[in-house]
Length: 210
Image (cartoon, rainbow, N blue to C red):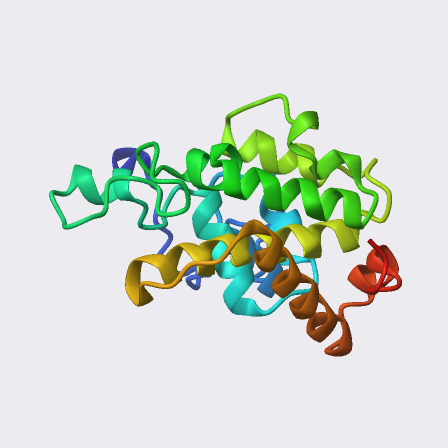
């Protein structure tokens, strides 16, 4: 705060503009850019969300998922909006983000099938140690995971596949088995690799292997 009572104005001196965001007092584009982020918080998931190869729509969906901002039944209930209450995939429990992507038997079977397919134990449900959605995601995408970039792309594809199946059951009245869901995921992986997902191509290798 400026102490106006002790300000000494010199009529003969020219006014000067000083940029307080740099030590030199001179404006810079970088300091102005940094100013936009003051008061914001850092997300440990940001890099693993936005850097992997995937369509912008899929990455944006993952970002919403990790912020608990997708419209699962529990969030709809809180607002008194129409919802199906039960998880559309298993019809056993209230649909929450944790349940839909990490607890539902059909989702877990899909994760397990993909884990065996690409020989990546870290994405197998048997390796999960937390029910916190962000910590769970960070555990899946650890830098110590072999071919981490490809694994991150694959994880985006898995959660997107689960979400689409969930929406198909709610809005289209269609459903499929975990085996067919896995088959569709493999086909989609082939399209992603053809479109430029090099990390995924390195991870998957020959699509015909079991």
